[in-house]
Length: 437
Image (cartoon, rainbow, N blue to C red; front, side):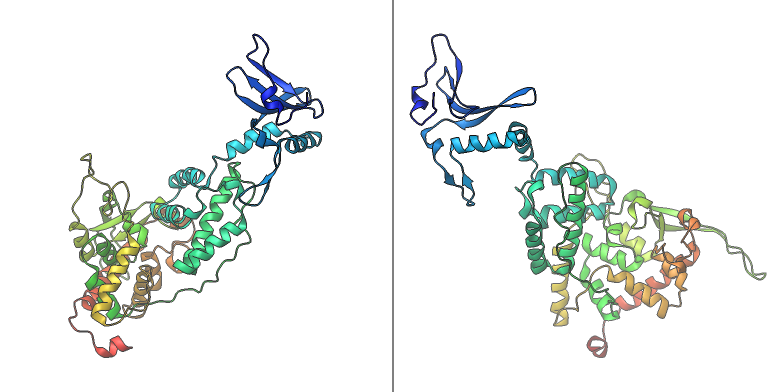
């Protein structure tokens, strides 16, 4: 029989038949499946090698024979034209049913679904601060990709996203999201989910190296208006210790400890310097940027800030390991807290401060230790845990294990810096000349 709009209703099951396929006499493989329950659907049956395959083509209705256009302008072939196209695909060695199954499986491989697996993998192998940044890039900045199949995301999709971020959040943010997305697609390729990386070829904005060193009056204003909440305490600890933001924001109770400064032999007949105990932060290698363990001596002012943060319990009554933040993670509310801080500073100063970032505290401390406090360069580098620097004395095999290198000198340097910072932040008046300079 010839399958037409009319024959859809005329095809009938015989006595005792519950399911039958009526094949078209002129178009091989094209069939109408009729079930006892009344359902009627189109099928396509074909041969791949020695195996016979059959695939459903949807409900059989008179409208099936009409061609139309989809919402995106792509053609929707009538059922006979569609079967002819499938027959040609089979002749060229394709397997339409296998491709349909694969396409259906890949339909669930949307960006948000695969991103969840990616974030699980990254959480197990990256520092908390780095993971939080990656999570923000994926869940916040890249959410417009949600709903798209990972395998079908194009370079244009990524370029449009990066352009929006560049406009709303600046070129640096766009570059950081670009790096995260490139890593995501490289991971997806390794998992067999994507075939290519659509980030490759998108524009990256040129960045200039930051040289921002905060002036004394700026340090004073930031300290004064930072407050005593988590954000304010973290900023003050960063000022006092020179450590990175995520290292302090994700500080654990178990990392606050006491260590012994070893005895030091006196030089040229001078008496030996005795060993003594200090308060310190003991950062494990998995928490530092260079993956090396690092001891951070705590001046009295830094220890007082930590003592003022009582241990807190989670909802289940178990004491939190993190000093700052809420739930099962450290502090993460940087953007809004900094906006409020900058508003308070601008209200007193009469104008906003020149743009700054918390990371600038490290550069400021380094500059002032070298230029004003007579701290030797290799000690400054050791304080900052710049292990790759030749001046740090920590480059090479010796630096891998000796986290206490120059510990006595670092104690002196950080106490000297704390006294200097106290003198700055304790001033009640800042000269107009200094503010204007």
